Length: 328
Image (cartoon, rainbow, N blue to C red; front, side, top):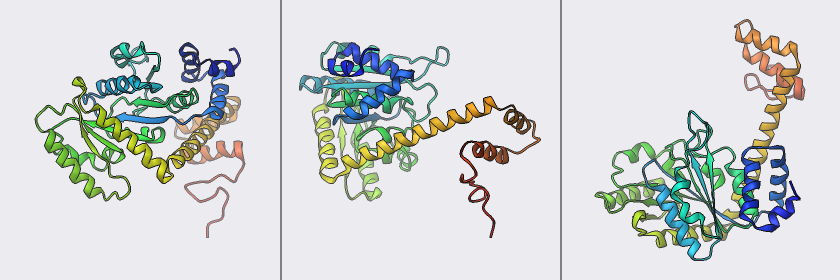
């Protein structure tokens, strides 16, 4: 690759696409790209759009993006698509629906495959967002795959989370209250022309009151994305939440937490790689693993032995305090 600084300084969509491809595929060059990104991070407002399948997230994202683009915002859209069980690639339905947006000079669209990740996001989403931020995007919209209550990864990436649902929530609120409903900064009742929209708003208001949130009370907005209704109000709520984060200092805290989370994940990745390499080089450890497989040895002893061979005997042993510590 040519000098990374030239790629970033070019502000070219083609150059950006090349950088993101390297990062998504975790090539050797991706580390240098992410290092460069860490020094160039801008101040992008990262907005996660989540909710169950069929809630109209893709249409809503398209309408939001079109309105923001018309206002001159430099915008990136990251669509996390379900992975095909046959090709292992993304089913790029979102990208097809957004072809009109892709023609706009201030809009960049990137589709990612989940590749088996269960948290609603692709494992590379945080890194993709980091590069887009460094590239000078004002707003990054991340549409999750829509898998239900396990969709919490978006919390670690987004500054503002929009939870999109449809009228007729009914008893489903009870099952969602302790899960995905609690991550929302803004609630969206899409397809609000359907019966039950007003009742859904009432149900959500009750849930919000019961949550006891005192700092930021998540607003509820009704939209009809197919007709573009409610989009202006929704954008206003996104901006209001950003202002709230900045005025309270939470904007900076979220970024600090994001940096630490990435450090933690990198440490785990490197340690996992080191463990695999250590096992592959050692016939002795491979035999021990085979013994565990055959039930001759236990996984607790062998796992501790493998880790000790890497970092010494001061590692934490959750089954007995510190390795080697005497019992009282």
